Length: 516
Image 1 (cartoon, one colour):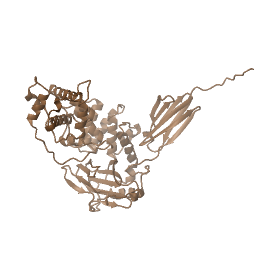
Image 2: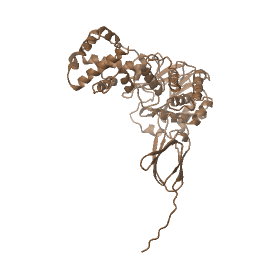
Image 3: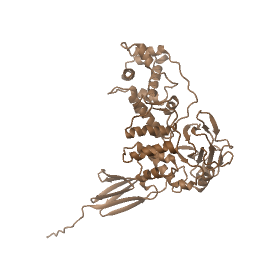
């Protein structure tokens, strides 16, 4: 039998092109993997590769959506993928969540006071809040909901006094059928706090009002408020809403990236922001946060100019905490000297709070955080790009520190070579902390484990993303609890966990003393 063979000329490479089209296509991240799981390309908006015949996997990341496609490549292949609208609390035509009755309500009440129906002047500073359901159908299906969406909401001024309650019909406009609530009032520039005292979802959110700008806050409900949907904008008074639509959807994309610690900004957006008329400074601030937290250096000089313009020309409120945070991040990013800064009020952006926390640990002599903000940090939520935390009390109650208890704990550690006076004077005064708080419990758990390297207050602060003084307060609180009443002899035990706890607390104390 005779076998005939036929040579088949095969191409070794094929051209693969995958493009994203539609609004915000520049934000869509594409990752291409080989059949063995090796990453071959990671690009935004488009991938172009010459590849051998085979199977490939493409991952598509767009806003909150994730999609995978299996690609069989045996010829040149050019594909497109349409970026579809997603959900946002802010009305915009691109977003599937937009309904005309929400858009109309925003257009009307963002230009008038909800208390007296008087128009807002162009040079006024104001605060506009808009609560909504996903749509009227979902609103109609809700049972056992509060009569007003403003129930349990109030607004505090910078002195933490209640100035408005949102369940007071004289302060708001509300449509209970379609499911929306609006609040709009002229405000003095400065910080305000939106407080929700729910049974299990209590929150406090700081909001800044800037001279001649309208601060807008949007929130979606489904029976109760969904705080992860919160969105904030800054807009000029009395400008047609549709002119801001492109900036609105760009802001939404940047915020989703910040929530996931993705610090990517398309070059096209950087160029637009740098040369725009600053219709929405919150977008510029969000872009600055993302760029300064990235490793990009291409546009450093441009961002120096943008930061200066934001502070001097756009938002002339130099004590605003987000502007301080950007100064701090800029010094880190550009390699400039770290400025002396104090966080006296919370940032609106969670990234700003994290910047202050991390730099207060690295630069104790230059970055400080006051007591009120430390209290907020210990109760921070992490489900949003915006700062939010469990509501704090108006005043602090300082516990009396008993020096005899300090001596007892130090005697337990048998610090015979250290004068008690020097040690007790070095310990921070405790705040009104409970051992049941998450930080004290977490630190106790860490200190009861065997450590290969010395434990320090600084290392614990980095691990738990709190300030070093908060760690020191918690350790002081732990020591006090351990020697109180029936637990008085706990540290004298000989179990492995107690030995670890004793040794690690000793290491923290002596390390801090050596750094004085």
